[in-house]
Image (cartoon, rainbow, N blue to C red):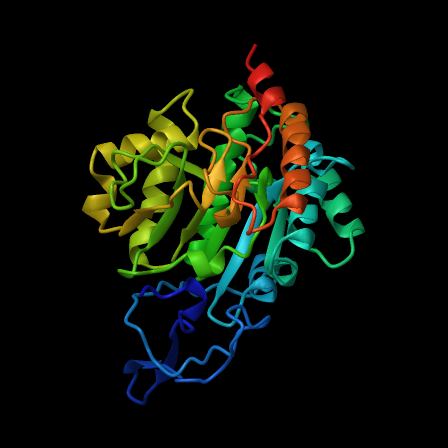
Length: 348
């Protein structure tokens, strides 16, 4: 039986002890605490009375707005949920509202909202986020926006703006790992129909659990499966920090390529194996998408509007998904997802 990522204990945090005669001794203090997760995810109180060997990464930072925002959203074991939005995604009645609707209506998902950090790429998105009660919002500093271009409008799939926005995201996520926090990253066009944490098991202490466009049936075959960066869990440690560093640096030699294509290229060239990043691919039966629908809607935790080009098409077809989810009954296995007709037309 695998271990849910919410069963992982807190990371050890190093404390410096300065001795006499100018000799510095670094003492690692690990506190074996017994605590429970907010929300009681499994229906039972979850205790943390065992220490599991998992290397962790923590780099000392002066307290800053990001540090405060991350720790404010994190669970006790330094894990949180991250999503990124710009003005176009934050428009009223758009993807932000649908994402929140899915969390509020989903099975066991409303309690997760307090652990989502909404990362705004522009002031307009930040203001919309802050106008909504109960959300944790963080404005990405302009110095982190690369070229400083205005990316607040809709960035069509594979446009120059879209590619720049994806790379800014990878740089930010790498910084989060350096702060010593693990996370689920979710695109805003991913609907959370059920709490996914019980389905995210670390059976072999994996560093990266990542979705795919079309699952080939072998979770360990990260080379044969086409990885999708719209939904993934990553543990903070030396291996994943190195991966995200190499990944972001690869943009310089990958003109015109989005970050997802570069990661798939890196895996084929052996980067994950070389860095020792233990990777498992998530089954589309539970982590579904428009590229490959799950056959059993009752098992689905998330639905991603991948294989879709425009925001308008995503919004239309995701609304249909949420309507279908309301009718979903585990005793009615015949339910099928609605056709993603607007997304199909978005390519023409």
